[in-house]
Image 1 (cartoon, rainbow, N blue to C red):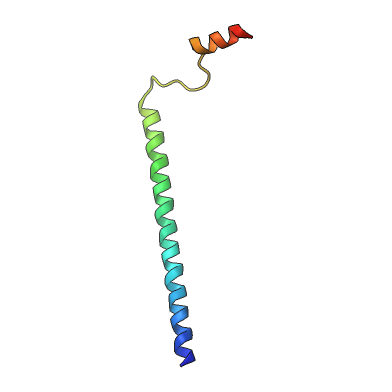
Image 2 (cartoon, rainbow, N blue to C red; image 1 turned 135 degrees about the vertical axis):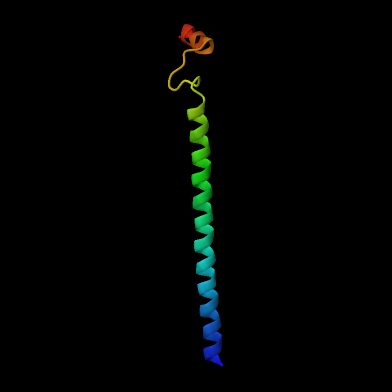
Length: 65
């Protein structure tokens, strides 16, 4: 009887490992999809400037120094 109980716990362990691996794959795929969608939108809009932007708000701050 104890052998049957041991086999059941092993089966449950293997099921849990399989579910964990599957969940990790889903999370990794979702993260990659989100990253790809954000980089695509940045590339599509050429008007978006990167880096330092001197705006009126920043000029006003510099004038207070």
